[in-house]
Image 1 (cartoon, rainbow, N blue to C red):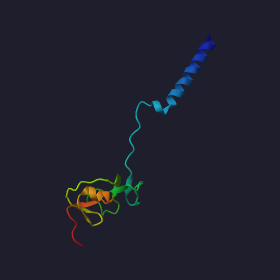
Image 2 (cartoon, one colour; image 1 turned 90 degrees about the vertical axis):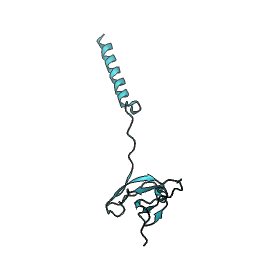
Image 3 (cartoon, one colour; image 1 turned 90 degrees about the horizontal axis):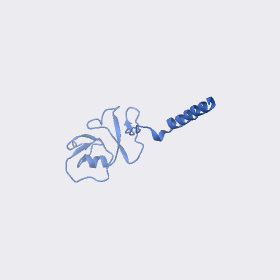
Image 4 (cartoon, rainbow, N blue to C red; image 1 turned 60 degrees about the vertical axis):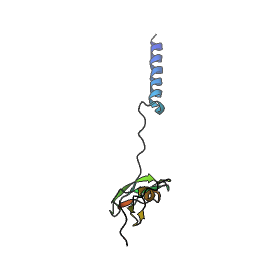
Length: 113
C-alpha cells in the first residue's frame, strides 16, 4: 500500500512540474513590446528603415533628445496645416513630414533662410 501512495505522489509531482513549466498555459498574456527608443546622446537609430525617430515637437535642437521610433506613414491627406520640420523645410502637414522621416520643430511655416 505504501508503495502505491509513494508512486502516486511522485507521479503527481512530475505532472505538476511539467504543467508549471509549460509557458503556453500561463494565465497572464505577455506584455506588449515597447516602442524602440532612438536619438539620445548615443545617437541610437531605429531598427527598421520604414521607421523614423520622432523627437516630439520642439525637441530638434536638444543635443541629447530622446525620441521614439515610429513607422513612416504611406498615405497622408492633402490638408494644409503647415509644420516646420527639423530639417528646416516646411511641410504641408505633420503626416507629410513623418512620411519623409522628419520630426516637427514647430507648427507653422519655417522662417526663410
